[in-house]
Amino acid sequence: MERVVFLLEDAGERIACLLNPESLVLRRRAGIRQRESAGGLVTGSRMTDDSLIYTGGGMTSIEMDLVFDVSIAGSSIVTEDVRELTGPLWRLAENAADTRQRGQPRLCRLVWGKSWNIPAVVSAVSERLEHFNAEGVPRRSWFRMRLLRCRLPEPDESFDQLQGVPGGETGTAAARAYVVMGDGAGAAGSAGLPAEPLSLVAYRETGDVSNWREFGLDNPMSVIPGQLLEIPDL
Image (cartoon, rainbow, N blue to C red; front, side, top):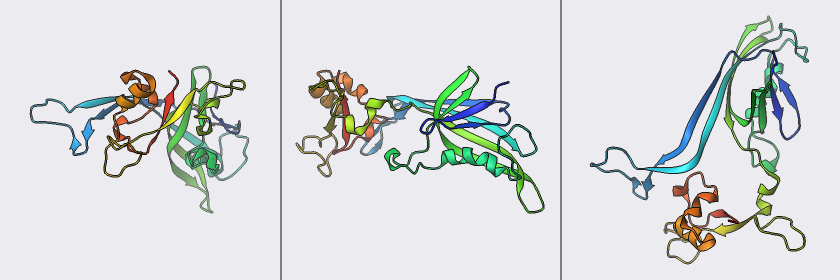
């Protein structure tokens, strides 16, 4: 049986597991939030259910348990300390040192044969160590991982390219930056004022009030004056 492998997208490295997990646990959370206002949640005594806002997107997580033991043959690392085998997976949950990634964990790809190929980041790890030798060095590890599926960045998605993409001497704009104003303030970032409605921004910038869904926002209710939006070319 083929082994589970983690491919690191930025460096092309390959981390293989000694033993495959016996099971995978997948969880899905839809892009739904409770509707809120400046005074708190929008609710009432006559309402059966709280008001909801459908933000789109959501979150998919994958959980797995792995076993590492230095007595198991098949590892390219010869060691008496099992942490040298689990260390590369543990470090996937560390923030990246490259400042261009803004401290995010490293992107990886979970690959298992031809059935699983999922781009993700490692959001949490835990490890139970046992079978210690006389020097207190652990020889076996029960390793648990939690991954969050994510979309791999595309070449034209960097912040520096918001104003346009190469297209000859003139070029064509793929997205443009827009600074959210305060509602009725006429200036961005006015203190104490709510943000202008996204439907108004969508109508003014694209001609259709429903196009605010294309702005790529995780939570439209959290937009504040002065926030930078990406307005796609629709």
